[in-house]
Length: 496
RNA sequence: GCCGACGUAGCUCAGCUGGUUAGAGCGCCUGAUUGUGGAUCAGGAGGUCCCCGGUUCGACCCCGGGCGUUGGUACCA
Image 1 (cartoon, rainbow, N blue to C red):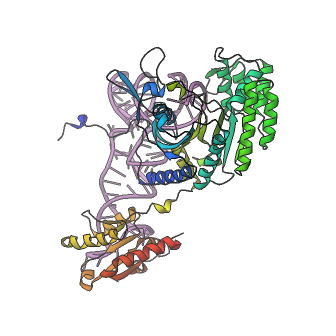
Image 2 (cartoon, rainbow, N blue to C red):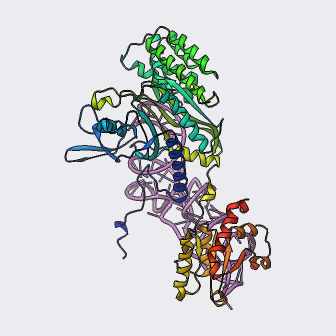
Image 3 (cartoon, rainbow, N blue to C red):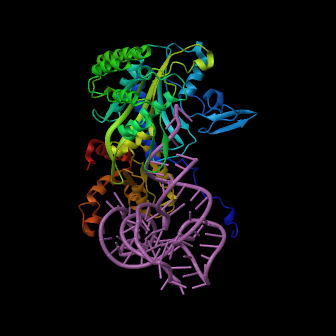
């Protein structure tokens, strides 16, 4: 067996990927269950699509060649390029285009699952991560946009993130375009509009001065890297900066201010009208300015958005290695009225949002709001007499039939090690049956959580060996006895 | 993609102007306790000092390259 070590592979996950174990998976499952509940309350129905799509579906391929663009994991089969989906919106637009007449209109669906991006992983950023989307396809009504806010606000609160711990920022791409009109920036000219949008998008990270630099000549960052600017005149910059500072508590006043800023721009005015309509609808849903604000600096990347855009941020700070930092954006969304058009040529309006499940989970963990109590292990049946496995198995079976998660110890170690095992599994109860018990017809039940609690007060060995956390019950009452202990736990007798 | 930092036991980290037996805490294992986890005490196991190459009598330490992690920046559906 020696001499082959060099041939052995080292166990490792690909860069940017990770293995997930019980605690995280349980937390995620619960979060998704909560989100499903909220989404369905609004009439969204489930949808699932494959991990792989043809690249033209995703719209990701290099202009000059037939190979996929960077950023996606791609593979080729029979001359055709496929790629792993990088979001859930592109698959949705494909579905709508493909099954259009079989689907209701409007079509409201939610979808959750992993997406993959081939890019540099960062802290809390992986190359495989979960998204949980909901979208309304086939209506231009601002009600659908306003409802996004309601769904998200309710989702946050259902997850235990209270008022004041989150804020939804709403803006409208039409208003942004209106402002660009107002400073007389020509469409599609050297990407100047793009550069302005990029600069605006960085307000929260770089601050006003940084953005000012990017709007003008460019900016040198602390690492010495230079980023080119949008090359605006100082008058133009002033207007844009003024626009960025238009955020105030009162949504109506933001609208009024924006109306001035877009001047005579038609799209701009339309965008403001839409925001005003959304405001009215938000009021009807009792969403106040402590939950939803209008924030002109929200751009949401340079994506396909064509109208209102939303960003949900967590406002609390989190301790990470001593440094306090804001959690930032965990959801994003908005209106994309031309995505389906790519396929059918027919203009089908759509709007929706995507929750970044993993980031939100990290946030909940940091908040300490994760319901850790639920990650309780099974009842463990310890084994003394190996030739009575059938008896132990019957106990396990009785408990399982009664709906109690139970595990019969299957290792080979001694009793002591078995209890350690039970402890590591966060087992609530250990069932103990050795020769004493088999003789008396009773079974010993050990309340592991009570034992843990008592251990904090016990000092000397004498008290230690008395085992006050144990009870003996007749074999026939095994299930009832275990149930009683579990109920005691559930009733809060185990809190500390 | 670009710039920088870091990479020592399972984990968090110490260490050395380059000198031959590399340390701590926690965790793990064993025993004190012929049938009792979590407390206490006593022992013990565990390391290619990220990888490859170079400099040197000698490298965990210096140099080069690679890989990985991380901070910033760019791009971002």
